[in-house]
Amino acid sequence: MKARLAQEARSHEWEKGDRSSYLWNSPEMDLNQILTFVRVAEAGSFTGAAARLGLPKSTVSRKVAELEGRLGVSLLRRTTRQLSLTEAGEAYLRTCSAAVRVLQEAELAARTAQETPQGTLRVTAVADFARAYLGRFLDRYLSKHPEVRAEVFVTDRLVDLVAEGFDLAIRMGELDDSNLKSRRIGSSDLGLYAAPSFLKRHPELSHPRDLQRVDCLRFTAISEENTWRLRNSRGHEEDFRVLTRFSSNHLPLIQDRAESGAGLALLPEYTCRKALASGRLVRVLPAWWSPGGPIHIVFPEQRFVPPKLRAFLAVLDEELTEKR
Image (cartoon, rainbow, N blue to C red; front, side, top):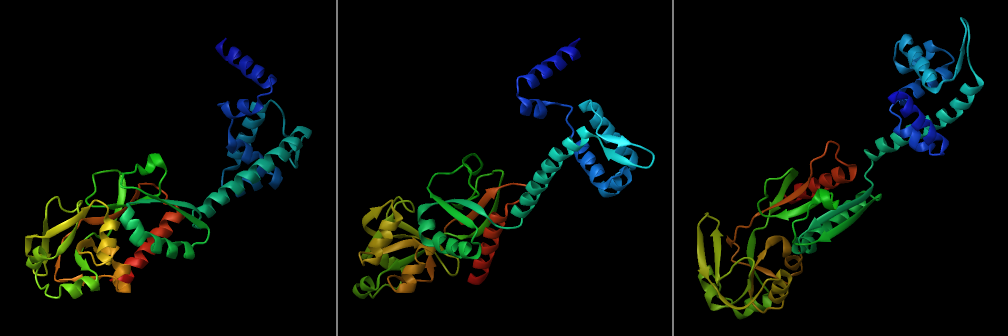
């Protein structure tokens, strides 16, 4: 009784015209049966289709019979010497052949997408790292892969990569335990930097103890008090008092002030590369620095890594290799 009522409900759904819903919600639909029928029709025999599909001839014959039973119509005329399509079979084949071609094209597109970097790579990073480093690196990445676009979201907030649809993040400091994959790409060590004009006014700097006699620019995210912890090349660490008349929680402002000659600053090495190359900043007391945390690239764990992300990691490896 229940089976008859279910059949009547499906028939009513078909009669209402919602044929798509009927087909895809039907638990009896078997795409393997349809593909087997198409291959039999193309080969003109069960034997030829079985060879093409890599299946026993009995399995091929059974699948076609099951398809005919489900449809309630004969698709093939079978004789001992010949196999031909019925009128219903010819009509069904025309539609199914087109559907199989579409599926094959979709599979080819999916395989190709796994080989060629394309689409939009969404990256998130903190502001100072993005400003100092990420733009130049992405220029290299995009020039090598013209079918990829890049979107960079700059924030100090810890972004949920999966929920918010990001491919990767650049994160500073130690990582919390998570399901993300990570790769360490460097560290955020800090050095002492000043403009040439500042050093002309203070040529006597020879030891960190001298920092309490000159204007220092304090980045409040590094130090809450007028003390900087520095390490030397022998591994010795010590806290040194500094004279601070200007402080800010905005790193680019601190660096701009240092470049203008307003004072000496303790800055991340990666933010100072351009200023060093152009001569706007000079490294002061290079035997001393402040150890920073690690820099990681993190990305979601996934079985098949998209080509755009694989290509990004490859360019990253090239960049890091050149720096060694």
